[in-house]
Length: 329
Ligand code: NAP
Image (tube, rainbow, N blue to C red; front, side, top):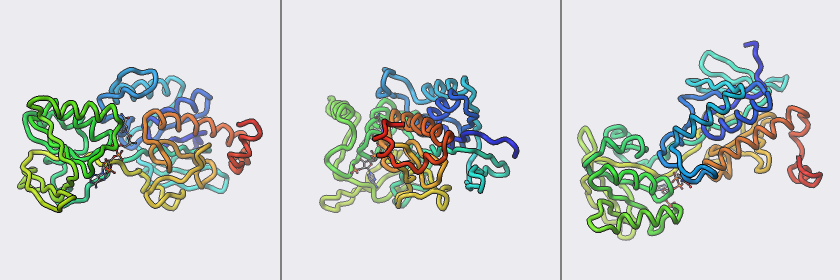
């Protein structure tokens, strides 16, 4: 391992690719290490309409553009590289291990994103891939003409349910409360769909999944009404789980400080973690707004702050408030 990168970015989602664009445009030697393929969660959406300036685009399309743009300024995107361990050296550089390969960097920007939260009910793991799915955009076509249950009340649940109704013969959406967490505009669209005459969308409130049942594939779900604890055995062909995300930070335990929920601790102004030279950006960090635009913004901030640190490592210890009083960075 002879080459030392100025900047290694762990994760090739929107935060990572935005950081790569800014770092490489500043002529820093930059590489993105991505475990699978660039994009992460955003690849699962076919409808982005809240990225300022872009009226509508699908996730993979946007990621392709972001990757091309970063590469055009010299950033390298290495896929199939799962970072397993990071170590800070005495010389201040950071070693990242991916299987038998090691990489060395002056600065690391952590953008590992987040993964699907599970329900944790019996049958969920057993039927994953045999009727249980976490991605409507990916799997809806397999349920053409079938009856599926969609679970959750956030933006993902509502967007994905609106996608599922285009394929399934019937979609039953269950939510554990009476009010949706999702944006008003999406909820209005959802309720309008459910209120259409002969709609194929049914919404059940105050309802949770107790167990997913079947033989080789999902055949039914036990629904529990949280108001009266009654249980209903509800026949269906598929169960789509959209109950939020958990950060992909298991590999960082013992290297940077994490919150109890596994989010990377960092200061909100400059995204500095507990390890000098290591920044966190996007859904993985504490206080993240979990939006495409904010994840991209985080990537930009981290790459700009990297410049401050590389110019003068003592900058790492400056208080954000001191920096602002002296006219910003
Ligand atoms: P989320 O906003 O955290 O919503 C998760 C939903 O699942 C909530 O309605 C929650 O119910 C429910 N839930 C959690 N655990 C549950 C359980 N064990 N059983 C039943 N229900 C459970 O997650 P998300 O929808 O995946 O969104 C993640 C982030 O990405 C959010 O910040 C969201 O705004 C963002 N996002 C934005 C867009 C967009 O702007 N177009 C699209 C997708 C996602 P409670 O409400 O009762 O807690």
